[in-house]
Amino acid sequence: MVLVLAATSSDEASGAGDPRSLDALAACLLAVGAVLVVAAGRFPAIAAGLAMGLTFAWYGIGYESGLVNVVTLAAFYRLGRSDGQQSKLLVVGFAVVASLVVMVGLGEEPWVEALTAAGYVVMAVLFGELIRSRHLLVERYAAEAEQAQRDAERRVAEERLQIARDVHDLLAHTVASMTVQAGVAADAIDRDQDTVREALANIRRSGREAMQEMRATVSVMRSGAEPPNTAPAPRLDRLVDLVAAARSQGVDVSLVVEPPGRPVPDLVELTVYRIVQESLTNVVRHSGATNASVSVRACGSTLCVEVHDDGHRRSFAAPGFGLRGMAERVDSVGGELWHGADDDGGWTVRAWLPLPATV
Image (cartoon, rainbow, N blue to C red; front, side):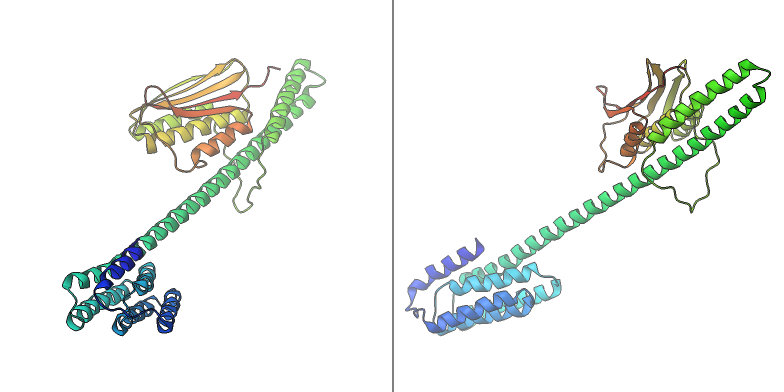
């Protein structure tokens, strides 16, 4: 639009004199101008300055067509798109001063026309600078989004690795328990049949849980660079520690745990612990809540876990930080997860984890 206005203004202003007709020389000058526009991609300041000199030569020869303005403003637009703020200011300042001196001092043109011509040059540069800034902003947003995606993938990989480590530890504990029970059965096989039956029942239950845990193992490898963790996996009785930690951060948290009347697999108990851990971490960091509640109850054949807070509604920029890892843990035991805002304006995380049938 700037180029069209410039060319139209120049053509309208040319009706007062006896303009020189466009000829072969004019075509050559316009061709040179086109070359300057192309060269402005690599040498923007030099090309813009030469384009301004070409404009002065064009009107000095006697041509009054505004076609040369298109070439000049295109060169200054490409100057605006380029880097180097100092060179831009120098070239634009030179162009404005030269326009005023040549048009008013030498050509005796009115000040209004000289200022208009200089204004077109400044507008072309500013428009180029605007487009350049927009492209830089888009590139920055794209880089930030790419970095966020990489961070999310890294966090997911770390969470999967932690899941693999937890499953490894649970399986090791289960196999050790089965070995002890088998030893008890072997020692009592000739003298205490009830003890043998109880030991075999425990082996059967532990083996069933171990198979479920093995099927839930994610396809990641445990790093051998770290020593194995010999501490017991977190159980339901460790939830009080999570609640106490949240209370120390200024959130009043209530805890209700109603264990089901059947054995709870170790992996399910660990999943409950991680759900509550991640949920309370989000409550402290993101919600601005003052009150929260944690409940773990048996709901038929499932174990229901719920963490609710009275904080504001919130969203997470990249799925896969804490919530995505939580969802993978729930999926690994065959459960379901839901999280979102409640009608009271707070935030709730609910999980339904299946329990095995009684032996």
